[in-house]
Image (cartoon, rainbow, N blue to C red; front, side, top):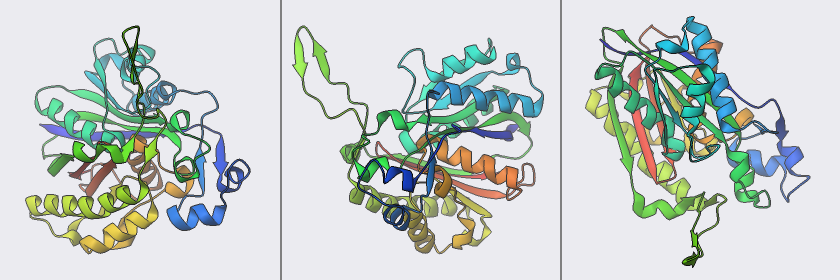
Length: 323
């Protein structure tokens, strides 16, 4: 038997911050932000931390299937904005929902995190695990420099996830390719702690997110299309045979360029960044959950879907799956 997504859910803070509201605290405007990014609004936490959002998603997934948390074998949370380094967000989720049998851990791969975590979870199912949660969750607002309009306008908070079960007679992953290039890691950074002790005082880079926007745009529009085409070649599948593309929701211009580069119908590139902004590891599962809710996607009818994430590390990865 193979893995299968049997439920999807998302949760976001109720507080919505518009571009116009941002223009009251920094030198920006709705026109400036939307024309460059496709973002209109973002959900911003007024107190909920990453685990709070992840716990809501976990409970929704269990409720959808009528499962007891004791049936879960594992919980993986992709995040770069944990409540703390320890316990992990996944451990907090495990405790909150009462999944006493499940092993739980966080995975750090920035905006590629959900794809990396889903790939890992699929291997766990193939190795004999039966049921697990894969969640992408971020409270990005707590690591932003709110005086920096080049980054603060881009990001939002949220969580999304799936229940993965050993429940299919056909392969879930048709083909995949995960990549990392640490030599370019300095183009997008956050969370630096530096070395501080009675024996050392070493200044490190800033803890808030720092991004070379041009370098990241070039990376995304050059390396990720190649990645997607490589996966399609492995699968011996034409671009036209993919039903939908669910990519990390960073920037609508990036999606425009990617669709053109691989020769795909732009309408097959689903997007929701207008209402959520860039939610890093949460962006793909939020989009997946919303698309299932709207009826655009349906579980169990073998739609061929490209999932592709890209971001800090630098990391990028593509999975061609059958829903």
